[in-house]
Length: 140
Image (cartoon, rainbow, N blue to C red; front, top):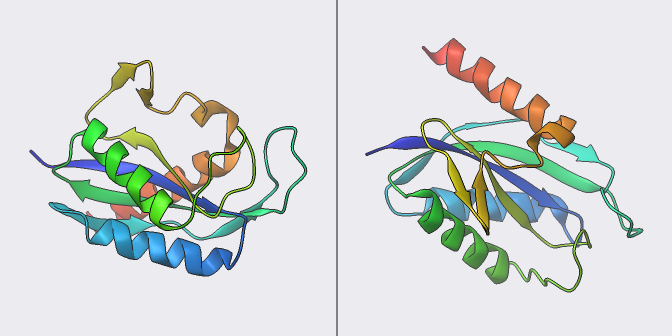
């Protein structure tokens, strides 16, 4: 069964634009998955207590046959391939990929919650979702 997953992309180390482009390409290669929309890229201040560079952020809508848990595992592998280190929570990162929402599914596991619990606290995610929703309405 196909669903639409909304995945947030972020980078604040190295060539941030190239990291986002590489992530989009990797996402498009996932089995049973295609990108059906992408938001604008925006620069945002980092969240949390650690001083670090600004992020580039973007969100993509993926039409996918992957279940949330399988998508999460694939996202973690893409992050790792991009050099992601998990040295500190809220720290700088080459690439951060988060499942923000699925159109038709919710998950409430200890290590995976969909919709993402931080969605209400991230105005840039809300803007990006609104942009993707507008794109979807225009395509219908």
